[in-house]
Amino acid sequence: MDRFSSSTVIPEAFQGAKDDLTTQLALVWNQIKAPLIVPLLRLAVFLCLIMSVMMFIERVYMGVVITLVKLFGRKPEKRYKWEPMKDDIELGNSSYPMVLVQVPMYNEREVYQLSIGAACGLSWPSDRIIIQILDDSTDPTIKEMVQLECQRWASKGVNIKYEVRDNRNGYKAGALKEGMKRSYVKQCDCVAIFDADFQPEPDFLWRTIPFLVHNPELALIQARWKFVNSDECLMTRMQEMSLDYHFTVEQEVGSSTYAFFGFNGTAGVWRISALNEAGGWKDRTTVEDMDLAVRASLKGWKFLYLSDLKVKNELPSTLKAYRYQQHRWSCGPANLFRKMVLEIINNKKVSSWKKIHVIYSFFFVRKVVAHINTFVFYCIVLPATVLVPEVVVPKWGAVYIPSVITILNAVGTPRSLHLLVFWILFENVMSLHRTKATIIGLLEASRVNEWVVTEKLGDALKAKAGGKAPKKPRFKIGDRIHLLELGVAFYLFFCGCYDVMFGKNHFFIFLFIQSLAFFIMAFGYVGTIVPQS
Image 1 (spheres, helix red, strand yellow):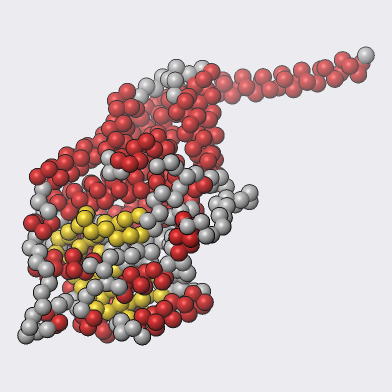
Image 2 (cartoon, rainbow, N blue to C red; image 1 turned 60 degrees about the vertical axis):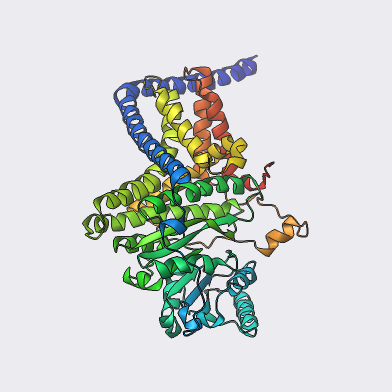
């Protein structure tokens, strides 16, 4: 009997201790909520609403401009002088500009043949073009394969140069800078740049070089990207939606209004004199392309974007590769903004309106505010209002503005409108990584200059599409689990449960779905989902 009564007392003791702990936590929460949590959360809501309005104005402005451009804007051939290159009987081929084609690569086993073949297939007088393969490969086997491929094209009469370095200092920027030092480059007038997975059409130079020949104020001609693997999985479809907006709207608006936009690092042609005047390639950030574009713009040079000229390329098809790419694309611009903001302000060659456009619109809103607000507002602050009902977010800030921004972002890819909900969830999750990278760039913290080359599949992708390659699992037990995403997932799940039991905001459906998205991304499953067209 004594044993029975003691066994019943122990659980009751544990239950009492548990109740005491819950009571103490609730007491502490109630004591700090009114004087500390509520004011801080109200301040956070206020700041997030300001950033939301900034994003809203920016999106609406670009939406209005792109609409006017599409309805009334003149085509590039009308805005700038363009005439097809013609043979000169007296001068012969010397009337054509000397063109350098640079193809930087690093251990590109799957795509080196595609990229070299596409570069060598460009149509241009054979004695007025030089193909330069900048191979930073560390794998000796791949290095030998690339060299043999260059020799094969050289045996066909192509003027191709195979260049290597004894280090990888500066990564891509270092390779491009080293390539420009070669003696044969001094005779070149223009340089076309293609990353290792880009495959330009043979007429690429015929459609771009005439703009530089007939318009001495132009420094850069940028083509649009065309994604060959956008239908591979749900993740590539989400990337397509984001990048299509960038090319359809952001690049077009920048080109049409201020003749300025960020160079995409590939699928573009530079006037070499403009490149040199701007200071050449610099490796101070991981966005050497944007760095060069901003410096050239501050020298008074203009850029032209050709939306009708598309160059095939490949999207990252694994979540790991996409994370690294987004870290570089988010950290680099923020770090460049930190380094160049005073230089832009003090510049005397460009107008005040262009300075405002570059500092406020191009850098601050798009590269800083957009990343931070997307994560902080929708993944931290808004869910927190469920726990603190005293703080109310106005409907225009929580529903109307985000809806308009989302719709304006999605118009660039009409075929994927039915995937809009998935895109919202995907972008919210990725905003965590972009926010972290942006803060690293602004503070110049560790990983600020981290450069991981994006994995490419190339021929393996084609074989997979044809059913010739065995499917490899994108995730295995034991792969890295991203604890930050896992932590946010549990936070959102907790807020959802609280809303179900005690809340008045009725956000629980959104919170549970967003929590599930963070769980999925934390374990890397998104790459295995194939969308239905």
